[in-house]
Image (tube, rainbow, N blue to C red; front, side, top):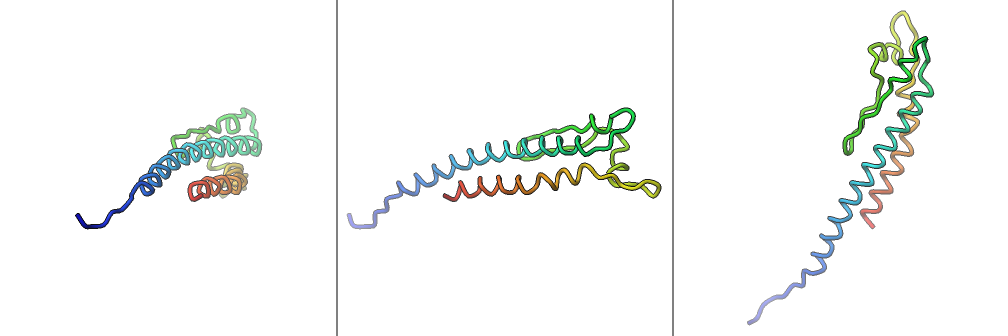
Length: 118
């Protein structure tokens, strides 16, 4: 029988390696999201204005799920403090905390992406 023969073993190996890398990268990325969220929470708590009750500062919580995180206070007046009102100047604490954590987050995510490509 005459014909062409293709050895696909290397392609199969590459596909298996990429699959493993994807799972590893996903786990690593989830860890980066969690660590960054915890860092933002810590920075925000340190920067939040402390009122008589301390509720704003102590109420800053973190919820993570996979590759997403929700960080924020659970008091109804938090946005007024962060953004200000027409009668009150803003006292930002959450957005600056997120911005401070961004470079390290981006650097760590880039390392994960580089690891997949190598």
